[in-house]
Image 1: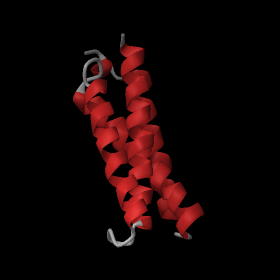
Image 2: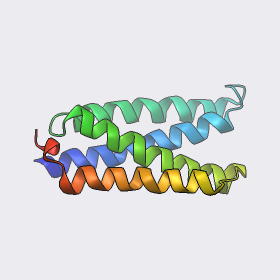
Image 3: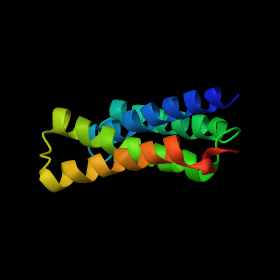
Length: 112
């Protein structure tokens, strides 16, 4: 069931984004609670990614995971950490989203 693979992938992406956000908040692992959240979230992300790979090809799964993760982390960095996004960054993120859409909508590579 390929839909389950994409559900696991979505959970992996959210977990990775939580882990990366907590990693920033951990201030180089000097704050124990965010550091622990980071480790647990990354372990969850990797476990869920492994479940994804039962039905979704690794290249496709990783392209989606990294593409969506980059966009979500950039948006969270903007909101939570005050990172500024200039026009080239926004254009780049739009291209990443377009790439993920092209892969999912048009590529025959998504067949396992």
